[in-house]
Length: 92
Length: 401
Image 1 (cartoon, each protein chain N blue to C red):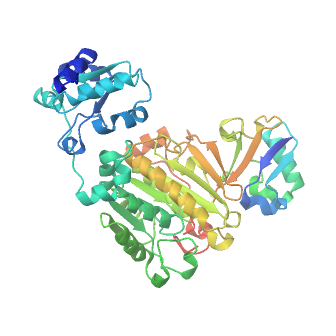
Image 2 (cartoon, rainbow over the protein chains, first blue to last red; image 1 turned 30 degrees about the vertical axis):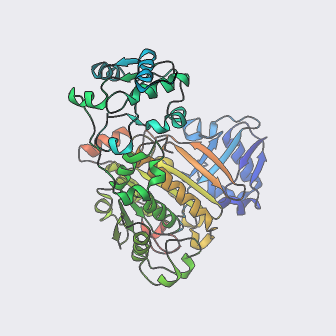
Image 3 (tube, chains in turn yellow, blue; image 1 turned 60 degrees about the horizontal axis):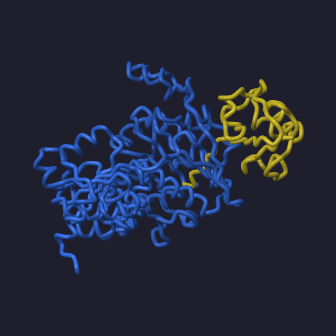
């Protein structure tokens, strides 16, 4: 199980949870498991082709998976995975 | 028997190695030497050795350990004529500094030897008082304060992030503050936009902010840009500024600002907030990633609501805006490590900070090496255009979200 951190903007889609433990050995598998549990996350995280949306970054232990192995990036138990969509607010 | 001044001087000479101005010049050229000016403030104002640390002799015991923590660091002290530095050097030896010398003949010998020295531009008496807490910090000091007074910072938005940032940058003595905002002060802004006041509701935000800044610090020149940031004015608006603080609320403005700032080689201190969370980083062109590297495309509006839709705890943009000011001051003074290449996340409910690593995207159409070459050749790479219809959230650009 790895812990996925859910940013506030996505929490409404996961019943308010801040973190969710999901099984999987790659980032792609974790996200698939997450989307299976919370189907409304699908369009927020993934394109129709199943790729990560370009406005969502995924970090494993602080590193952007785009510069690791993308969805193939291996994750181990207790790795910290963060989803981070672009934020709008400048509180103008 | 009590000792005379000449006895003390003789003893100091016997203990402390003296070096000539020529020796110091050669040692400095080799690198690794710290030069300490032990004269009084009034003497330093007349000129000093470039790169020297200033600790007047009366503070040497109390301040030297913070300035030079490594007791094996080679140190040369100087004063005006070479006597006070000799006594100060003896004190350093007592404190355990292993490699200390005093420059014979002091600054007079240095100057008359024709070596380079700095003629500082002095602060006024009022400025010395106003910025006294900055002047006490070695990392800022008179030089840093002078840099701030000569600096120009542009704030995009005089809102939740821009308000606290503008006040603190003004207080810090940033000489020119430009404000881009076309909006007017609304009573719903006042929960977080602390530069505005209840009796200025209905005024233009740039004028309201100008009043607050002028009242706080008359050293600051405010340039009010009462207009939207748009493709046809972005280059003009940012031109000549040293740093831009991004306090915008829309993706369209962010991408517009990013592309123009990278092309103009101006760092952008970025923050965004959502309810109890904030993100912060510095986009320093070519040294770290740009906004397009971080997010190549914006989310659809329903996935990234602005504050007018989602709400925000007022102190969150306050905290993020002040962290932006901190990064701005570091960039202007050239101290510390900025957040370039790092994204700082703030969670106000847990009071936690998390740091993520960011990288330049080698295929970025704006800041990659290829994009830089293409721009230099007058043929910039095409960039995706994120039009206003799709990405303006919660009102017009810079709106009172």
